[in-house]
Image (cartoon, rainbow, N blue to C red; front, side, top):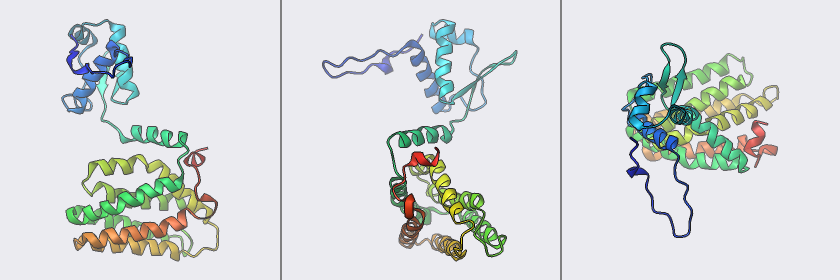
Length: 268
């Protein structure tokens, strides 16, 4: 049977509270088991008949619980003789889509997104310098070398916008991930589509322009300097350098009519 004890809550006087549906309670219990890794990715849930008996519910109620977990990308339903409800690994892209939608609905601007990044990333650069490993340094250096190759292969032209945006975003992503702060790493990940899409648009606007590729070479030098500071364990220097770099980059990325541009316009 379903354990109701963990769902009771005291509501303010005069406030009506909707009682959770049975399917929601089942989904909550199964979700908790997935989060606690009692059920792991790739594992099949017990057969429906067994779960129906365990929770004391009908098949339609159980399947409604499955639909809730499916919309959260926590399970997928496999058909056929070997079918059943299979556990999926939680995917940050689900949160990214939802957060992106919320930002668009609220009329969030690119200025707003970059302001948040300029607060979070320098702090992550500081933590990275304190916690870096040899693998972190190797991965950061690899991205820098790929960026250099992207410039050299264009024969003194601005780089391919899709490749440049993908590589530069990877560098920023590594800073947040390897800071070892999971909360900030997820925060960065949910903004990936917005940041990468805007960066690609911005670089594309200058693809055939007379702008010198020196701007992109300066970015590479800034990336190399951060790797050097991180390798030296210079937390203060890494944070200060990355903040200066991001402030300078924002002047380029948010200039002209892109200033204060609503996020929703990127995907319209």
